[in-house]
Length: 212
Image (cartoon, rainbow, N blue to C red):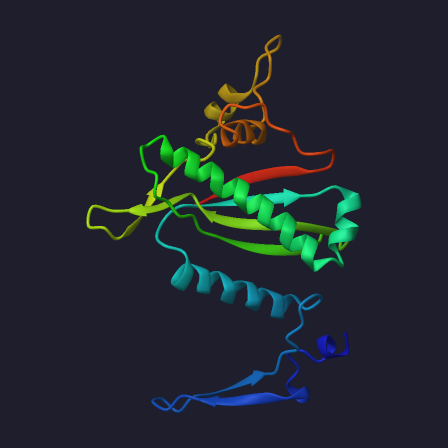
């Protein structure tokens, strides 16, 4: 907290930067490099991480964000048990990659690989203890191309989302009709290849959204 109070203050330290071509100088104040309370340092870290993922990690292909939320009792255990965090994340990633591989087999592609990056978030919007997993996955699979090299096959994991008011109204169930089943349940049914899946326990939810 003391470092945050001095973050960006020139009196607490700075660097003098000078352009060799035009000779213009600029003072750059030192930052606290905090991970929690400093919005400036957190925003810079977010921007740097996003640029690294876009430029050096993810291919030029659609991506999808998956969020796994766990029950309250399990959140407290995961807060201090790193091995359980790894185990829970491993189960979720295997189920997610299995979904993409199953969809690829519908196109007749058996040799596939998947890719994803996971961020473990430990707090909610109210700064409460809420350990959940933010997974950004390539919305498709890697498969051998015509030249034998790996290529990305884009797959629509959950279909298109309504974007216009007309599409949103058409997707709203009418009175007296059965509402559509949740997409998460449909994903689990596809992943289990038609078998009756075991739904997540109370308090566990899986959400997804597209990243363009």
